[in-house]
Structure formats: C-alpha cells, structure tokens
Image (cartoon, rainbow, N blue to C red; front, top):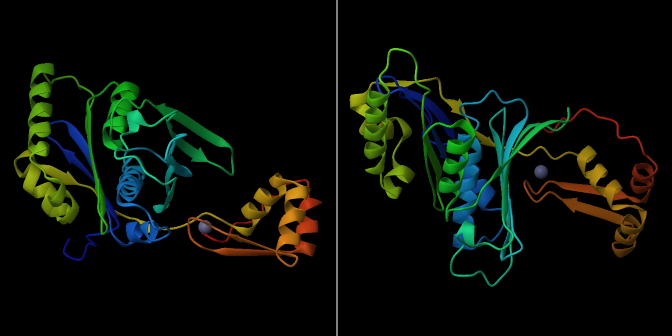
Length: 299
Ligand SMILES: [Zn+2]
C-alpha cells in the first residue's frame, strides 16, 4: 500500500461493524489543471473545487456508463458551475461568473438557481437527470439532502477545496439487513457522524487518504477497496465542435468567418484545445445535415 498515489484518487471503504459505506476523493494535479483554466475569484474557485470533488465522489457507489455531471445555473453573479467525472475517472469542470461578486455565494440565496445531476451516456442518449433542491448554503449540504431524499437513507458529505487540493468524503448508512436492531444501527450511524465531525477542513485537505480514514475510523474496522485513479480529461472533439457550429446556423458561421480572415478558431474552455475551421470546412459542416458518429479519438 506504500506506493499508492496520495492525490487524484478515489477510495471506497466499508465500516463493517457500523453498517456504513463511504467514498473519499482527493484531487491534486487534476484540480490544479481545472482551476488554472480561468482567473477564478477565490469564492468561485472554492465552489468549483468542491463541485469537482463531488462529481467524482458521486460516481463511487454507482455503476456508471458514460459520465456524471453536476451543473448549477443562476441568473446572479455566479452564472454557471459545471463539473463532470466519466466512468474512466476523467474529470473536467468550469465556472462562469460576473463581476462584482456579492459577498456571499450561498447557493440558496442565488437568484433563479437550479442544480442538476446528470448521469448517462451522451452517445447513446441514455440519460438520467435529478434536480437538487437548493435549501442550503453549500454544495455539500445540498447534495447530502438530495441523497437523503432520493435514497431514503442517512448520508453525510464533506467537501473542501483550496488552491492545491479538492477533497470530498461521503458516508452512507447501509440499508437495514435482517439480524440488526434498528436502534443499534442508529447508534452506530450517530457514532460515525460524531467521529467525522472531528475532522477539520485543513486535515481533510492535507492528510493522505489512508491516514485520514485510519485516524477517524480505526476502531470501526475499515475495509478499503481497490482505489481508482482519477485524472484531468476532456471529451471535446472536432466532431462535437462541428456539431456546435452547425447548431449556430449559417448566418453565425458566416459572420465568424468574415470576422477573422475566413478562419474560425474554437478554443475548448475545459482543456484549451484549439479547433480550426476554414471556409471549406465550414461549407462541409453546414451542408452536412446528418450527424454521423465519427470515432472520438480524444479519450
Ligand atoms: Zn476540451
């Protein structure tokens, strides 16, 4: 276990005696790559880091085919938060905002705010979307509430991000199985919640994952599963950018060509990949009404 990476990793674990399962995500280089894409104000950056960690966290206990994304939109200063984690452990994310930012970016105070979790496979059109109620200030509380409501089981979620790391810890009480007393299970859950509450933000951000789990739960017989590697990765492709240009329509594409010497340059906001289209490319894509699924070689 000594050569395990401490960063960019997802750990699943089971607290066997307590009947609790958990996921711990620690992002380092992946988070710094996402954070470096824009000159994010600290408050926006913190929310983006938490959302990115959460997108990986939520893949921990589901059978994922495709990607899981968390998206928050509002008509206020924080216009968009987006984070995505694929079934291959590839993460990307971005935020859009307007200056000046208000003092508080509490989610439940954002005007016309909505948050959605989307799970599925874009290519095959199989998608599930759940709406997250925004009754709380933070991303963690909003997601915790979502889990409690959708799965009818207690859940605890902690998220934190600074300039170096983005970290998430999720605990879920397992459904009662025969042979357990409900009251005993309740005691065990409360004990785990209390142990978890001793965790400070700094420790969450800096401690190595195994050390963190040992420090918190060493009396609870922690069973660690094989960790999963996470990495920055973008699913953009020339095919998808072509589709986007096609959806803008001829007038917009013509205007873009005219504005820049018959060249269109599209830069992916997630990964900074540049895509170039000249007039011939543009004609081809505009006359190409049937979207063919070209193999995507970017992943
Ligand atoms: Zn990209």
